[in-house]
Amino acid sequence: MSDEMVKYHKDRAREYEQVYEQRDPRRQEEQDLIRVEMMNFLSGVGVIDIGCGTGYWTQRVSETARSIVGIDINQTVLDIAISKTYRCPTEFKIMDAYRIDYPEKTFRGALASFWLSHVRREDLDGWIEQMHKILKPGARIFISDNTFLEGVGGDLVSKPGDPNTYKLRTLNDGSKHLIVKNYFTKNELLECFSRHTRCVTGENIFHGRCFWWIKYILDN
Ligand SMILES: C[S@@+](CC[C@H](N)C(=O)[O-])C[C@H]1O[C@@H](n2cnc3c(N)ncnc32)[C@H](O)[C@@H]1O
Image 1: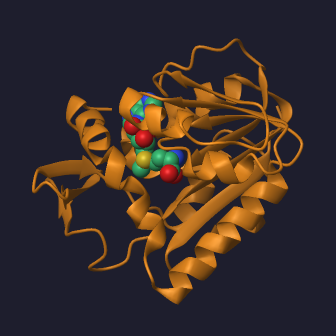
Image 2 (image 1 turned 45 degrees about the horizontal axis):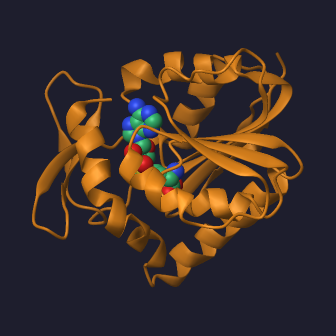
């Protein structure tokens, strides 16, 4: 991930959770659905929350998980996450999601919320592969993110010859940041994850109006 992207998330830390307070009822309904699915699916397991940010979803998953390690590359967001309270044993570490520093087969659960859209398409396979490596066979994986909605979150920017898309984001202080923001169709998600596991079918994917998620149990 580029330095610009890392700086954007650092500068955005204090205003980040505003994205979860939008008043659109359909959005809130799907957001609630994510919370319930995530909490049920990761219930009772030791979870790594990759790109945990300010701990918004960490806190929700802590209602049911056995324990959680949240990792993020930005100390600023981690400071906010650390200041919160959790319902299960939870710790946070500054760590690069592309170089997860845990031995193979460490965790029984993985959560990545609103992270995959920031991964460059050319890095997706490598990221999924190393995420699988630190998980035990039978581990539970829950990944969610935004669907593309015209006019939401700024204009979508494409660059000639680049498979990625970008958004120009303006923070409350007026600073502007061009960030990688990729959107996936249900078929793209299916194709991408099927390259790494045999256990993903269309049944494992929810693709709504505002959000999508994929949840699956690792077979290998
Ligand atoms: C859109 S936020 C999502 C935060 C949180 N998961 C949520 O859903 O509220 C993406 C997070 O990824 C973090 N991040 C960016 N690059 C990273 C990297 N290379 N390794 C780990 N975290 C990274 C950012 O600091 C930011 O907190």
